[in-house]
Amino acid sequence: MTTALSKLTQTLATKLAMGDGADLISTLKATAFKGDVTDAQMTALLVIANQYGLNPWVKEIYAFPDKQNKGIIPVVGVDGWSRIINDHPQYDGVEFVYADKMVKMPGANVECPEWIECVIYRKDRSRPTRIKEFIDEVYRLPVQGNGQNGPYTINGPWQTHTKRQLRHKGLIQCAR
Image (cartoon, rainbow, N blue to C red; front, side, top):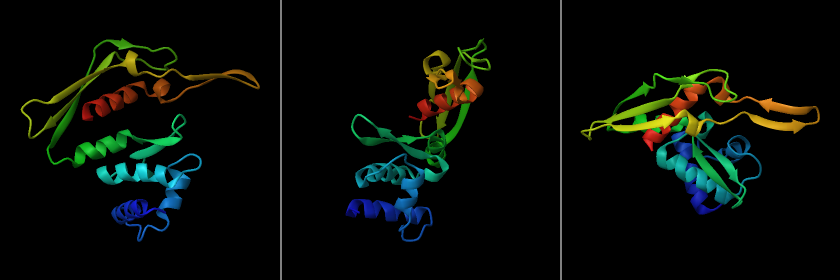
């Protein structure tokens, strides 16, 4: 293990009350990653986790393999963005405004507002940050394929919890 990774491991282990962090790397490799993980990839994840105080075991941050560069892409989940927002000392609340018009996207089980507006207030700004996300720009179709038993469709959260997914997208974009 490199010196940089060792320091990052100790910092995160201390924050998570995991003692000296001896088991942290092996536990992260077994739970937060898919496949083999190099020390460089683990370092990339831990830099972001430590910088923003994110916990990989509660899905605040996780990693996807980057097949093109053979590295990883650290991803901050909606719970991580919520943590970042709520921990900021200037945070002063959030509101959501929904479109009146409802639409049903292809493959979705339910209707959803055409757009959602997220409004984040900060104590140090005279005007809030407002971001509008449109369902037709963020919606993900069900996964379709052709297996041994013929064609199949796998519904995901965009089909079953469309409004929640749109709200999450709005919050993340506004926080960014």
